[in-house]
Length: 133
Image (cartoon, rainbow, N blue to C red; front, side, top):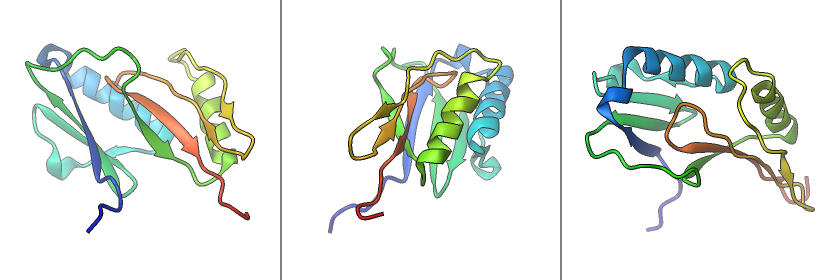
Protein backbone atom coordinates (compact mmCIF):
# COMPACT_ATOMS: atom_id res chain seq x y z
CA UNK A 1 0.00 0.00 0.00
CA UNK A 2 1.23 3.51 -0.77
CA UNK A 3 1.21 6.46 1.61
CA UNK A 4 -1.44 9.02 0.66
CA UNK A 5 -0.46 12.17 2.56
CA UNK A 6 1.91 13.64 5.09
CA UNK A 7 0.60 13.72 8.63
CA UNK A 8 3.14 16.05 10.21
CA UNK A 9 6.47 17.83 10.03
CA UNK A 10 8.88 17.66 12.97
CA UNK A 11 11.76 19.98 13.75
CA UNK A 12 13.88 20.80 16.74
CA UNK A 13 15.37 23.87 18.38
CA UNK A 14 18.02 24.15 21.09
CA UNK A 15 16.52 24.04 24.61
CA UNK A 16 17.69 27.58 25.36
CA UNK A 17 15.63 28.87 22.41
CA UNK A 18 12.47 27.06 23.52
CA UNK A 19 11.23 29.66 26.00
CA UNK A 20 7.67 30.58 26.96
CA UNK A 21 8.17 33.91 25.16
CA UNK A 22 9.36 32.20 21.96
CA UNK A 23 6.42 29.77 22.09
CA UNK A 24 4.03 32.71 22.44
CA UNK A 25 5.66 34.58 19.54
CA UNK A 26 5.40 31.53 17.27
CA UNK A 27 1.78 30.87 18.17
CA UNK A 28 0.79 34.54 17.89
CA UNK A 29 2.48 35.00 14.52
CA UNK A 30 1.38 31.78 12.81
CA UNK A 31 -2.05 32.05 14.41
CA UNK A 32 -2.52 35.55 13.02
CA UNK A 33 -1.18 34.84 9.52
CA UNK A 34 -2.37 31.26 8.93
CA UNK A 35 -4.90 30.54 11.67
CA UNK A 36 -2.70 27.80 13.16
CA UNK A 37 -3.25 26.86 16.81
CA UNK A 38 -1.43 24.74 19.34
CA UNK A 39 -2.91 21.33 20.12
CA UNK A 40 -3.06 21.78 23.89
CA UNK A 41 -3.64 18.07 24.49
CA UNK A 42 -0.15 17.35 23.06
CA UNK A 43 1.63 20.25 24.79
CA UNK A 44 4.69 19.37 26.85
CA UNK A 45 7.25 21.67 28.46
CA UNK A 46 9.68 20.79 25.65
CA UNK A 47 7.18 20.28 22.79
CA UNK A 48 4.79 22.46 20.81
CA UNK A 49 2.38 20.82 18.38
CA UNK A 50 0.67 23.23 15.99
CA UNK A 51 -2.45 22.20 14.04
CA UNK A 52 -2.21 22.90 10.32
CA UNK A 53 -5.51 21.73 8.89
CA UNK A 54 -5.66 17.95 9.39
CA UNK A 55 -1.87 17.83 9.81
CA UNK A 56 0.47 19.33 12.36
CA UNK A 57 3.90 20.85 12.92
CA UNK A 58 5.79 19.47 15.89
CA UNK A 59 8.59 21.56 17.41
CA UNK A 60 10.72 20.03 20.13
CA UNK A 61 13.53 21.32 22.31
CA UNK A 62 16.56 19.06 21.86
CA UNK A 63 20.20 19.27 22.80
CA UNK A 64 21.10 17.83 19.38
CA UNK A 65 19.00 20.30 17.32
CA UNK A 66 20.59 20.75 13.89
CA UNK A 67 21.67 24.00 12.30
CA UNK A 68 19.45 24.91 9.36
CA UNK A 69 20.90 26.80 6.41
CA UNK A 70 17.70 28.29 5.00
CA UNK A 71 16.81 25.75 2.31
CA UNK A 72 15.05 23.33 4.66
CA UNK A 73 11.34 24.00 4.43
CA UNK A 74 7.88 22.51 4.29
CA UNK A 75 5.07 23.37 1.90
CA UNK A 76 1.61 24.59 2.83
CA UNK A 77 -1.16 24.28 0.24
CA UNK A 78 -3.70 26.98 -0.50
CA UNK A 79 -6.94 26.32 -2.33
CA UNK A 80 -6.82 29.49 -4.45
CA UNK A 81 -4.32 31.89 -5.94
CA UNK A 82 -6.16 34.75 -4.22
CA UNK A 83 -5.64 33.15 -0.77
CA UNK A 84 -1.94 32.70 -1.41
CA UNK A 85 -1.58 36.29 -2.63
CA UNK A 86 -3.48 37.53 0.44
CA UNK A 87 -1.06 35.69 2.74
CA UNK A 88 1.92 37.12 0.84
CA UNK A 89 0.46 40.61 1.25
CA UNK A 90 -0.23 40.07 4.97
CA UNK A 91 3.35 38.87 5.50
CA UNK A 92 4.75 41.74 3.43
CA UNK A 93 2.85 44.24 5.58
CA UNK A 94 3.47 42.47 8.90
CA UNK A 95 5.11 44.42 11.71
CA UNK A 96 7.78 41.72 11.98
CA UNK A 97 9.33 43.08 8.75
CA UNK A 98 9.70 39.67 7.14
CA UNK A 99 11.98 39.48 4.15
CA UNK A 100 9.88 38.15 1.29
CA UNK A 101 10.81 37.24 -2.25
CA UNK A 102 8.30 37.94 -5.01
CA UNK A 103 5.70 35.25 -5.65
CA UNK A 104 6.95 32.67 -8.15
CA UNK A 105 4.37 32.02 -10.84
CA UNK A 106 4.67 29.39 -13.54
CA UNK A 107 2.97 29.48 -16.93
CA UNK A 108 0.38 26.94 -15.74
CA UNK A 109 -0.63 29.10 -12.74
CA UNK A 110 1.38 27.39 -9.98
CA UNK A 111 2.27 29.96 -7.28
CA UNK A 112 4.75 29.77 -4.43
CA UNK A 113 7.09 31.76 -2.24
CA UNK A 114 9.21 30.88 0.76
CA UNK A 115 9.91 32.68 4.01
CA UNK A 116 11.46 31.87 7.35
CA UNK A 117 10.34 33.46 10.59
CA UNK A 118 10.76 32.12 14.14
CA UNK A 119 10.55 28.43 13.18
CA UNK A 120 13.79 26.67 12.22
CA UNK A 121 12.31 25.47 8.91
CA UNK A 122 11.11 27.88 6.25
CA UNK A 123 7.48 27.77 5.14
CA UNK A 124 6.59 27.59 1.45
CA UNK A 125 3.00 28.57 0.69
CA UNK A 126 1.93 26.94 -2.60
CA UNK A 127 -1.05 26.98 -4.91
CA UNK A 128 -1.46 24.24 -7.52
CA UNK A 129 -4.08 25.07 -10.15
CA UNK A 130 -6.57 22.32 -10.86
CA UNK A 131 -6.39 21.05 -14.43
CA UNK A 132 -9.39 22.24 -16.39
CA UNK A 133 -10.48 24.73 -13.71
